Image (tube, rainbow, N blue to C red; front, side, top):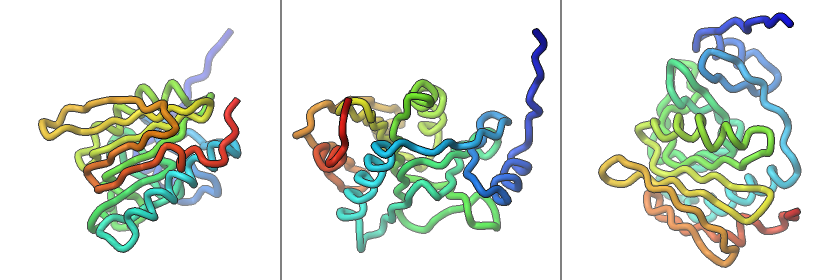
Length: 190
């Protein structure tokens, strides 16, 4: 059996390709990865999380963005489209095109069966290296479970999981308390 190597592209080539594409593509260590559509429950969890953040942050210095916002994880190796992104203060961009955010404060990813291992592994570690990021939420869609990565004042990360529908998650960096019940509202679990 022969294998064909996939040609790696530069970040600049990726950005040019993605900007011209009709579908969203992420950039992972030199490879362009097309994003598949999401399940209804994935979409609802992301919309619920966006709504909960929006209700609490509206009118303040932080803004909430949906999965259409491209975010730079590392200017040389990774770009992604998180399900929800919170940016506080002025948006910072990677270049003069002003279409790729470089300063997310909070990121939310809803875990999909096909990308779960990557999202919990390499992608979470790449997110944790973003200097401005203070919180990362990884939401399971097959059960009530939200993993919360929180950057401590010393720069280290504390990772906890909430599996109680009646609980709330404190996002101190943006002064929010997220109701787990609101995030999972209307979601049919297996």
